[in-house]
Length: 96
Image (cartoon, rainbow, N blue to C red; front, side):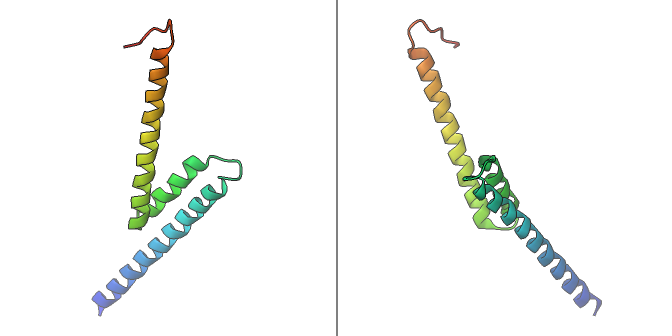
């Protein structure tokens, strides 16, 4: 009997934790989406919402990985473009 009660309580606690994380994560995510048209750092808040949701949902984890990959490739292409432009300018000194 005690085992049944413990299992029920543990299941309820896990469910409650999942609901709280979902509510907080979706709230942060929706605020970030709203910041796309409203003033605010949407590019920071949206990944934060996904990171919160990634603790409970596989789809959020996969989407967060795609966002991280896209940010990294964009950063690398900007860095490469700036480095190329700096070396192409006449009279520029390369820092290599």
